[in-house]
Structures are given as C-alpha cells and as structure tokens.
Length: 211
Image (cartoon, rainbow, N blue to C red; front, side, top):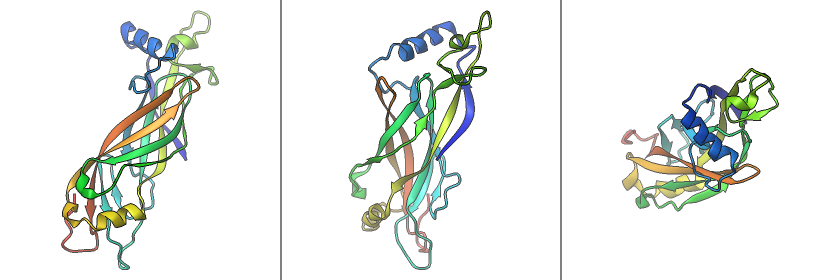
C-alpha cells in the first residue's frame, strides 16, 4: 500500500531554519498542525483501476450508473511528507464538500499507513531530523527524508454518488473539497489538510458537462 518517492533533505538550509525545525521536532510540541513536521504534499490517481478521471488538482466523478458505462467508486492517492525523525502513523481522514447544494455531509473514515521519518544515509536504521543527528566522529553525516504515497483512498463511494445523482444542478461545476488527514507519532497527534476540485458528471450522457 505504501510507495516511497523523492528524497527531501534539510542539510544545507540556513541555520535559523534548522534551529526552528529542531525546536519543533525535538521538543515534542503540542501543535499537531505545523506543516514543517507533517503535511500532505498533493494528490494523484496513478495506478488506480477506476472509471473516474483523477488528477493532481481535480477529478471528474461520474454519479449516474448506467449499464453502458463502467461505474466505480472514486479513489485517490495522497502524498505525505514527514520532516521529523519519528515515524507518523495515519489514523483516519475526513472529506468536506465546500458547497451545501451537493447534499453530502462530512464523511470521516479510517485510514492506515506509516509516513516514514528521517533516516541517516549511512546508519540506515537511525532516525534523524537533521544532518547533525547522523554525525560520525568528525563527519556531519546526511539525514534523508522521503515522501510517502498512500493509495486507494475512497473519496466517493456508491452511496455518496447516489446522493449527488439527485442533485443535477451541481453537475458540471468544479466544486472545492477539503480532505483532512489525522495521524500521530509516539508523542503527539497531527492533522493536515489539502484542497481539491471535484466535478460531478453524467459520463454516459452526451449532454454532460466536463471539468
């Protein structure tokens, strides 16, 4: 379920910024929303076998089920960054459609996955937030951070699609939604949110308006 992607490094950043990261990460602060520690980098639909078109900034969501067209739930992948040394574990997520005309209440569901923290390049089992924590003798060392992708998160199930199917006045419009993720490490809880655009359509109808 988890795929690791591009490397992020704190080494070489200004000393003041590194000191701020150490303060936030090393002291176990109570604020769980600071993007310097944990945040969602973006979304995509890579590798998902589904009828709906899901991209980095928005999705076209078919809400009218017809025998002539493939009809599936809408899934999305989310890409996360963890800039502390400890691993962060996802606990759940919520979806809020920012337009009451759609008729969908906030959805909250479970979500699991581990967002890996920093690891020393040479001592690969050692956790780290900055390069200095990987020092060996006179060598400063290198701390690396990697993005983690959690795949197949269900945004709209069949019940939600059926609800929107009864609201044709909102079809064909790019509507904003907010996706919030909840997580924790051994010391504190976190949450991070990302904005996304959704266009509900009747894909099989020639009169449907796309995003």
